[in-house]
Image (tube, rainbow, N blue to C red; front, side, top):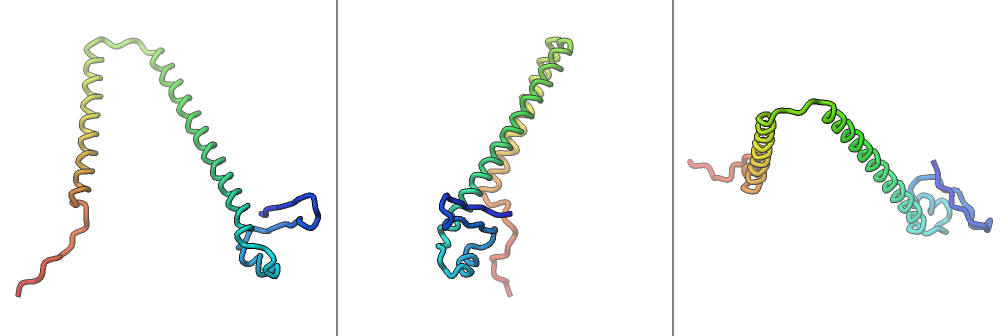
Length: 127
């Protein structure tokens, strides 16, 4: 795979195979500035990286829309629950949130206090 840099004048046309710019500068008799050769490559890498991020976000948003549409269609197709079942379901959701947040808080507390550090022996031996 290569990068083609071309202009209207034939003296500035060149095809550059991807490789290290220092090798290219040495083979060309040090006529080319290696930093100038790295700039188009870095710009192209940034463009590809941003394009990949946009594609990833677009795919994730599409999946979110499809999942939400499916959930709404299933929700509308099922009969409604009695009030006591809704209360039980709401209580279960609240308990799950409390326990989940509590466990995460304990994890952060443990990490901050140093309980997750590997065991080490700093004491000197008694003789």
